[in-house]
Each structure stands twice: as C-alpha cells, then as structure tokens.
Image 1 (cartoon, rainbow, N blue to C red):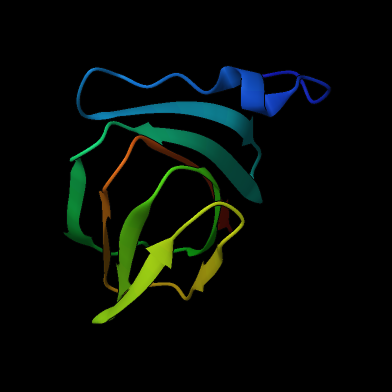
Image 2: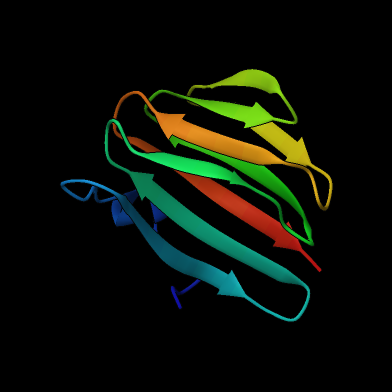
Length: 102
C-alpha cells in the first residue's frame, strides 16, 4: 500500500509489454489502483460486480463501455455501473486510476 501523501504521478512506470498495477488504497469500501499499460496492450471484455470510475493520467487509448468507444486521454473521467461490460486498449503508454466502490 502506498502512503496517502505520496506524489502518485511518481509511481507511474511502464512495463515493456502488458499491464502493471499498484494498489494505492484498499479498504472495505474503496479500492484505488494505479494501472500502467504498455503501448499496444489490451484488456478483453469483462465485468465487475462493483461500480467503478476511471481517471486517465497520461497517454492515449480507447475504453469500450457497453459497445460505446470512449477516447482515453489525460483528464478523462469514466464512470461505469456494476456488471457493465467493458474493455480497453492502450494506443500509447497509458496510465489511469481505477476506483472501485463497495
């Protein structure tokens, strides 16, 4: 777990390929995870039993939420309801926070 006062942007590090994730906060009500995706990496369609929010920090990609493509660019905020089908692809090295609410 990462201390709350850390500059979270300093935690960004891109793998050569694939996805690197780091827990930032993990409580019984909230999980915050930093994801760093290498260019060309994708995560196939899946769902979550929790509602979630994504905040893009840097990079470029596409988030598909229930059949609708949403550009992932710095500053973009995406909210999804529980059990929403979604997938994503990094067109460049891309980092984002995923917040899951219990």
